[in-house]
Amino acid sequence: MKSILKTSTIAFVSALIAVWAFDQVQTNQDKTSTAYTTMPQVVNTSFTPSTTVSAMSTDFTMAAEKTIDAVVHITNTSVGRSRLPSSIWEYFYNTPSREYPRIGMGSGVIVSPDGYIITNYHVIENATEIEVTTNNNKIYEAELIGADSSADIAVLRINSEEIFPHVRFADSDLTRIGEWVLAVGNPYNLNSTVTAGIISAKSRDLNSYDSNNQSFIQTDAAVNSGNSGGALVNLDGYLIGINTAITSNGMGTFIGYSFAVPSNMARKIYEDIVEFGNVQKALLGVTGNGLNARIAEELGIQETEGFYVAGLEESMGAKEAGIQEEDIIIKINDAPIRKFADLTGYLGSKRPGDRVNVTFLRKGEEKTLSVELKRTPFINYYGMRLRELTKKEANKLDLDEGVHVSAVQNGRLYRRGVKEGDVLLSVNGNDISTVDDVLKLDEDSIYELEFMNQDKERMRFIFE
Image (cartoon, rainbow, N blue to C red; front, side):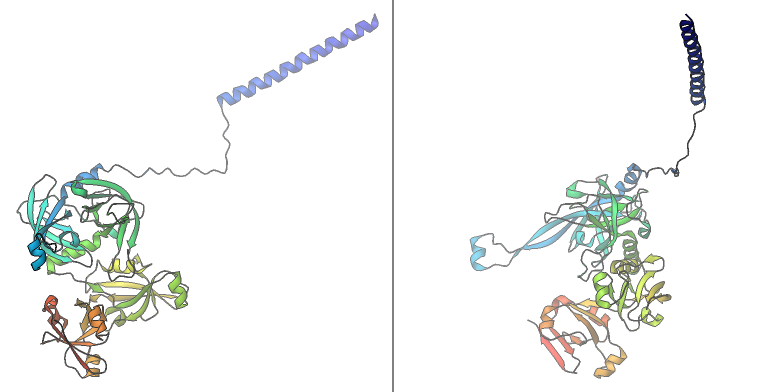
């Protein structure tokens, strides 16, 4: 009996303890649940929130509306010659080739309210008639005011007293890789076509081995045949380039990239032609190469970017300012110079008489000099690069007149022995004293040239 009472007492006490313990645990859980419900805890981590940046606007409507009425469709008519006989009579009797009209098409950008247009030179090359069609389908005649074939830029003017919508220029030096752009033109005669893309690269030279000083803006905006001469604009609708070329698989269609002449260069050419009647080209007066790893290794230097000065032109700004051979130009004013196209692209927007600050490396030490840009002393004539004869060169050859031959690209003359350093004395019997004398003579009707070589030997060539 006692054993049963003892066991029951222990069980009862244990049950009381268990009930009390359960009640305490449940009370604590309720408190914890209430705390988390009413005041959640914030735990700091190593993550630091960044400032929120709004995405760049991709609304192109304003830029398109500001541009589309200022881009015109250009039709040029030129004269071609057919050498295919149209009859058996022509075949057997070898009659002269017949002339026939050739029609070319492209685009242009109105850049002033009085109807001046910038386009590509290749759009109107050899044109006998030029016709422009505006976005409202009005047709006008236009005249060629001037052109720079090396930059592939031409300036036209619409023959009308009307006031025209026009595009304003932007500073193409301020464009950035990755920013949105629109290409506006007339591909395949589809008037007023707008495409969008981004700037893929700047200062692009499509052929480092040719004589053209190219410094294109590269974009992935779709450009096709007929877009040449059209506008490349930013999202504010301002002109940053003139669409000029595309990459192609040989079929003449767009496959990913297009190229535009920067607006700073196009604007400078346009203003020169309108104000002076020709293009005022300015040079530093240096020769050399843009650096890369291979050239740096050959020269035994560490720098792989910049322009390496291999030579200096007499009486030009660079030599007069104190720039020396083997200097490496790395900046002009605030523009970095990493390759040759950077140098030519920046100078393409300058005029003779402008001064620029040239920053360069000389044996590893950075220096800056102020240099006056001067008019190019060279002209291209009959496959030769010519400049004025210096007094030193004239005295050496006992000459009173003539022009210096700086380069020979005419294979016919080169095979006959004409070399760099020779002096051109006369053309068709006309004595030559200056390059201006040469420019007055039509190179398409040359039949006689006279030179003097470095051994003071005269050479006369007569062409049939």
